[in-house]
Amino acid sequence: GHAITDADIAAGRRAYELDRAHVFHSWQAQGPFTPMTVLKAEGSLVWDGEGRRLIDLSCQLVNTNIGHQHPKVVAAIQEQAGKLCTIAPQHVNDARSEAARLIAGLVPGDLNHVFFTNGGADAVEHAIRMARLHTGRKKVFSAYRSYHGGTHLAVNVTGDPRRFANDDGDSGVVHFLPAYTYRSYFGATTQDEESERALRHLTDMIELEGAGNVAAVVLESIPGTAGIYLPPDGYMEGVRELTRRHGIMLIADEVMAGFGRTGKWFAVDHWDVIPDLLAFAKGVNSGYVPLGGVALSDAVFETFRDRPYPGGLTYSGHPLACAAAVATINAMRDESMVENAERLGREVIGPALRAMAGRHPSVGEVRGTGCFWAVELVRNRETREPLAAYGGSSPEMNQVVAALKSGGVLPFANFNRIHVVPALNIDDALLREGLAVLDSALDVADGFVEA
Ligand code: PLP
Image 1 (spheres, helix red, strand yellow):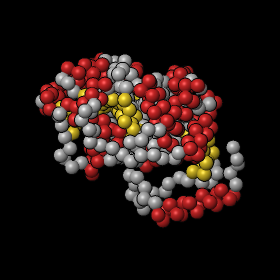
Image 2 (image 1 turned 60 degrees about the vertical axis):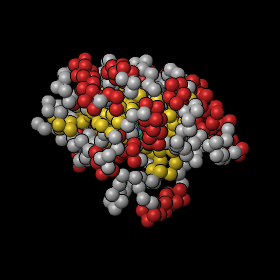
Image 3 (image 1 turned 180 degrees about the horizontal axis):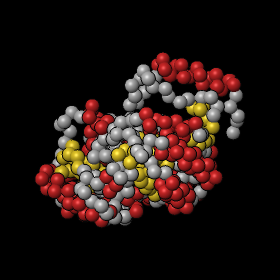
Image 4 (image 1 turned 180 degrees about the vertical axis):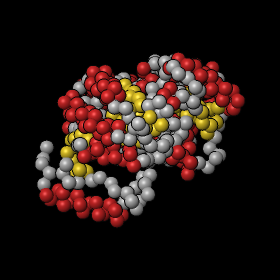
C-alpha cells in the first residue's frame, strides 16, 4: 500500500474537527467522546490519525471477517457500481439472486429463502415479525446478557443495560437467564449442571408464560458482545427440542457469530441445530457495504406464499451490498478462510490465551472458538469480581485498553472483557505480534488484582 503522508495526516485532523462539529455518534455522550481517526486500513492493519500502524484484533465491530480492502471484493463492488448501483427491491437483479443462492446453500437445513435487510438489527426485527405472523403468537423470549441491535424491537430483545433507556415495557419480550457457566445464575459448577439447569429454567419460564403464547425464542448461537460465552454441551440441542415441542420458532441470531467467525460457517453448525429462522449481517460481506438478512425455513416461507408479507425496505437486496456478499463468500471459499479460522483458534489463539491465563492473575477465564475469543478480567480470581462492573467502564479497564493501543493493537473491549476477534485470514505472524501486545497489557491488569 501507500505510505501515510503529512498531507494525509493534515486531512485526518480536518476530518476530526468536522466530526466533532457535526457528527452525532452511536451510544456516546457526545461531549467527552474522543474518537480515533482512521486514515487507511488494509488486511488486518489500520493506520490512525497520526499515521500509527495498529493490528486490528477487533475487526471493527466484529464484522470485517476477511480483513480490510480485500481486492476481490473491492473489484466486485467497483464492477457492480459500473453496471447498476441500485434497483428497487421488487425488481430482479443478478447480484441479489446469486447472493441468495449462495447464502441458502450455506445455512443449514431447509432455510431456502433469504429476505435481505440493511444490517443486523432489522434482520432480527424481521425474523421476529415473520415468527409472529407464522405462529399467530406475540411473546418473544430472549436471553439476558445478549445483544440483538439498536433499533426499537431489537434493543428491546437485547439483554444488556443498553435496553433500559429504550424499553417501553410493552414489547411482548420476556427475558430469561442465559447458560453462562463462569457466572452461573443457577449455582452450577460444571458445564453439564449449567446446561441442565438453564434448560430447566427456560422450560419453566415458557410454561409459566403459556407455551401457546410464545412466538419465538431469539438466541445468539454464541453470545458475542455479551462475552463470547459458549453454550455448554447439550444446551442448544435442548433449546431446539423445547421450542419444537411447543411450536415455537427458534431464531438463531448469527449476526456476529455467522459467516466463519467461529470456525464453521454458522455457529449452529457446532451442534447441528437447525433453527426456523437465522438472522445474519456483518460477515456476510465483511461490512464493505451495509447488508443483513433473514434465512427462513420452508414452513415459514409457506405462510407468505399466498399472504403478503407486511414488511420491506427500499434497499432490500441492494446490488452493491449483494455483489460484495457474492465476492466475499467466494473469497472465503477460495482462500479456505473458515478452515483457517478454525486452525487459528486451535493452534494460535487458544494456546496463547490459555498460557496468558496461567501467567496473569487478572485473567478470570479465557474462552472461545475459531476467531471468536474473550478474556474476562477480574480483581480477584476467587470471588471473580470483574475489573469493570457489568454494564459499565472502569479506570482500570481503560488503562488496559490504553496499553493495548499504545502497544499497537486495536482491541474490542466491553465492560471487563477484551475480545480477540481477528480477521479469519489474518497472517499468523501478525496475530502472534498482537497477542504478545495483549500479554504485556495484562501486566497492567495484574496491577489491580487484590493482594
Ligand atoms: N445481533 C448481534 C448478535 C449483533 O452482534 C449485532 C451487532 O453487533 C446486531 C444483532 C445488530 O446488528 P447491526 O448493528 O448491524 O444492526
